[in-house]
Image 1 (tube, rainbow, N blue to C red):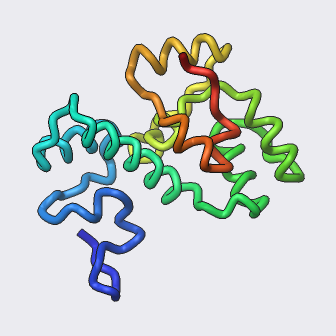
Image 2: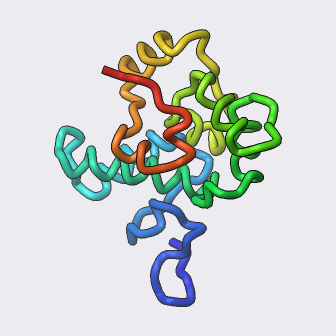
Image 3: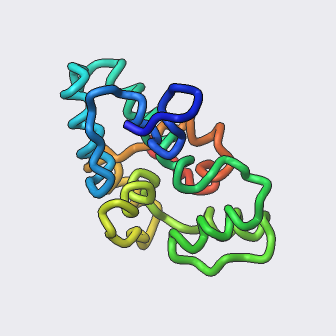
Length: 157
């Protein structure tokens, strides 16, 4: 675990850095690492605590990779590149283009350590089926609170 000068986990350590005794594997899938952490912490996969922590993990890891400042054009352009679209000249244009892309948010965060490409789905209906089937669903409440993620949201249920 990385320690900051204040004595707590360093921001670079991300979500996993706050759990003493847990050795985070940066090259592993986010979902696999979270499942391993849940086992380490004794969280039942069906518990409310586990579901809440999983969503917190997804959100924090997203911000660790993409930042939180939604007023910076460079951050929006970075997100465009990550999902495989041409970076735009304004934040509004980036949002417009991102809203047309069908990518799974969990996969978007997960592709970095695994080296896999971010899959673009042919339609939002196909993305919905994939997300439900795999259980890779990002909390709507958390996504709506985040400027980046709200641009990628689709209706799930």
